[in-house]
Length: 251
Image (cartoon, rainbow, N blue to C red; front, side, top):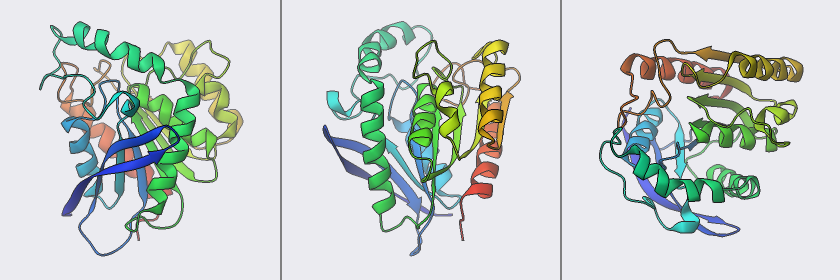
């Protein structure tokens, strides 16, 4: 399906968040999807994923998580984030990640959802939140904070879903109404953490699948990193599209 893309500015409580929007090139409305990037942030890799998903009939919004520090890319990123440059890139990114507190995450989620659902190309009804790496935790926080608005949540090679913090995302699962898919790399979570997470989903009574994608390492969906695994990327699309098809009306 042909798509359109455009840069957008999202009004937030702390300023203007730059973002990327992709949607079908049709004079009709489509379900909304809020896509949270991994720790490396908004970049061509995420724009490509948004375009791909938009081609299946969705309006996809990808915000710059670090907009308080400047427009994306906030820090210089190489075209390929290989092992030799990864430590230096993370050294520049970690202060931004650490500054992105839960309070900021929730304020931003309010703004992102308000903007997304107000777009003329977005149909009425619930939306989905999806995320990669730390973005999976943001997608989950958004879904638990807005159970009346989020019908699906997906996370791939997730980080920070199960922590010792009192407000760890897994402790908030009781607020969920969304259906969930988590696509884990081998080693993303311990068996004990996966069990704890699944027990929380069971107690919440939501539909979910927690799957370890075989032969993967953290970051497997990202073609601009050494972790990229084409077969696992396709599995991610298969699981994600099935979830969205079940939960969001595409007309």
